[in-house]
Amino acid sequence: MTSTAIFHPMIVLILWTLAVVFLIGRRRFAAARKRLVRAADFECGESENVPADVRMPNRHLANLLETPVLFYIACLTVYVIGKVDAWSVGLAWLYVATRIGHSLVHLTYNNVMHRFRVYAASIFVLLALWIRILVLL
Image (tube, rainbow, N blue to C red; front, side, top):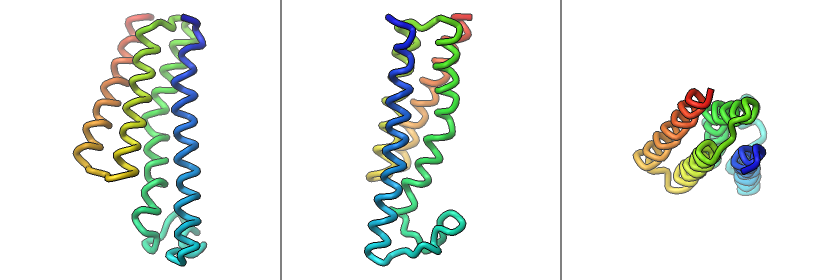
């Protein structure tokens, strides 16, 4: 396995995050075309006038920029210390899969308990990745 393999899950999560950015624009412009929102509704973020289905991708984007920061740092750490192995890459892919799963629940039917379970799974995978780093040091 090459050491750059750790970058592949990172790239996928970055592309997924950018897809959510595009979803934000798509939902906002669709709401504007239907005259559900005005530009002023986004002057200071999102006003109370913005429908929940239009607000949700923006909230989810914030979620994709919170704990994933620890994931990116973990992947870079594994690379920098020269300890990229099948375990670290596998955990990285599992983390990405759980984050995408979390996104799919959050941005579709949004069952809070389902969303929580997938989110919790992603946190445990992230913890396992960091424990792996400690073992490798």
